Amino acid sequence: MLALALVVGAAQAADTPHLWVREYTGIALRPSGVIVDVATEARVPVMRFGGAIFNDTFAGAGARLAVSPAHLDLAARASFKPMDILPITVEGVYTSYWESPWGVYGRDEVPGQLGPDRRPAYEADIDYAAYALALSVSPTLQLKVGPVAAFTNVAMTWLRVRPAPAANPYVWEPYRGMVVAPDDRIIEHTSALLFDPFDGNDTPIFRIGAVLRGRTGHQTGDTTVMLGGITQWRPGRNAHDADFTLLVAPYLQDPDFRIGSPYFALLVSFQRVVPFTKVAR
Image (cartoon, rainbow, N blue to C red; front, top):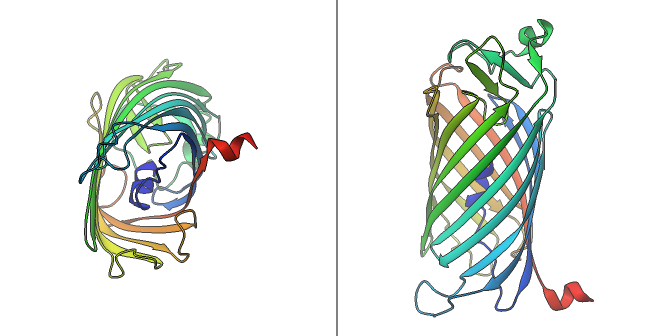
């Protein structure tokens, strides 16, 4: 769900060192889940050469906290935007998974209708508490030409889940909704093409377009591909007003859900930039 936040406008920037804050709340169906995610960074402008693509460049570092019914994320993060069209984020993440109907449990194989009904696994008492360490690198290529906005994001994650299940080679990882090996590499991809008839010029934002999403685990081959429609709406006129993003994307490939069955996600996001002069007050 985090990748959906990328379609919520351009990252706000400032001409002086500043505090950047982003918060989003997401709700999803197929698979179902709720998450609240807050990130903050101290950012400084760098490489402001002007021209077409060096106006909002920056470097930053900070932290992120995310919580859902299945897990808690604590992350140290750094970001670098060497060009306006290429923000890059790196995170080191500690994840705690709770023993719950939505938690971690061992798997013998990748397929298995995990998403629609987790209750039997919970009632069989094969779920367990666990933790994970992850390193994620996430570059994004983003463009905007007149009323047309587009981006493509690739997130590469090295994931280590512990304890590994004693009797199973694989683990059901609930945050990503996939089967992984206890030590795995995961690649996630999101691309979107959106049209804004108002062009975002001193008006509320309304964008509509298409999105392609996918992810795969290197060790398990658990792969999901979905293609659908996406809408972004910001009813206010200010960059720090709330953005609402709705995604409806039928599955083209997935081991857990019927092909064509749609995935739904609703995201409410806020971003704010606060100059350090105001923070000091």
